[in-house]
Each structure stands twice: as C-alpha cells, then as structure tokens.
Image (cartoon, rainbow, N blue to C red; front, side, top):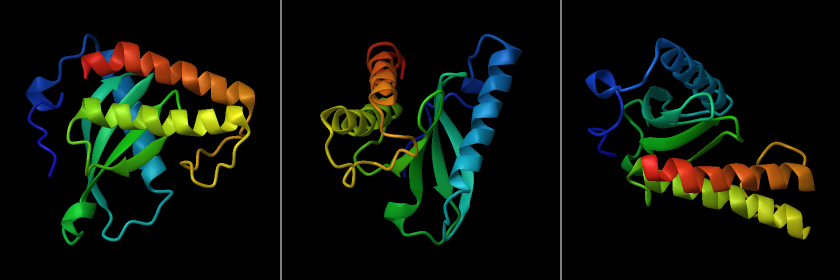
Length: 152
C-alpha cells in the first residue's frame, strides 16, 4: 500500500484559494468519470489526492474495495489538461515517481506518433495520432518534468 501521509489531504491541504479547491474537486470528478469507463472488480472505493495543480493536472491514488489482490488494490490516476491515464503503483510508490512514469508513457506514445511507428505497444491514448497532438503532448510532458515533478 502506498503511504499517503505526505499527500495534501485533510489538515495537510495547503492551497491558496477556495477556487483552487473547487478546481481540484472538478478534477476529482473527472477522475471518477474516467475510472468508471472501466470495469473494476472489486470497484474503486476511494480517490486520494496525491498531487494537484488545478486545472492543469491532478494525480490521485485510486483504492479498490476490499477483495482485490494486494498488487491490484491501488492504481495511480492522472487527469487534467492532458490525456487521462491510470497505471499500476508497483514501481512508483511516490507521487513524483508516478508523474515520471506518466511522462515516460506519454512520451512513448508521442515519439511513436512522430516517428510513424506502430502504436499497438503504446498506452492507448484516445486521440488521433497526429503530429500536432504528439507535439502538444511532448510540451506538456516537458512542463510536468521541469516544473511540476520538483514540487511533487
């Protein structure tokens, strides 16, 4: 299980304005909608905010209801002004590592699009594989790597 002690929740929630909190609530709702496009057995029970800069990005830890195998009990979920994604927590026990993995997955897709390679082994990002979208995604990945990961 991921240690959530340092996550910005409850008394640790340190955001500047009520508007920021509302935008994080919008991102939480987006994460729930995204997760509900999949079948989970057992279902997702909770989303814990791990990192967020609303409305740009939010990283949540999704926890499943009891009964899931220990290795399947949690998943990272990324939503915001970028492609939504969920992935395992196995090798990414911290928000910074989870964001690094998100960037690596997104860069793989964008690099393959730009090189005209097959996308069957890439994460299924549900947009047209165009040069413009790939370049936009690489710009967001660079921003996450240089500006946001150091904050996480």
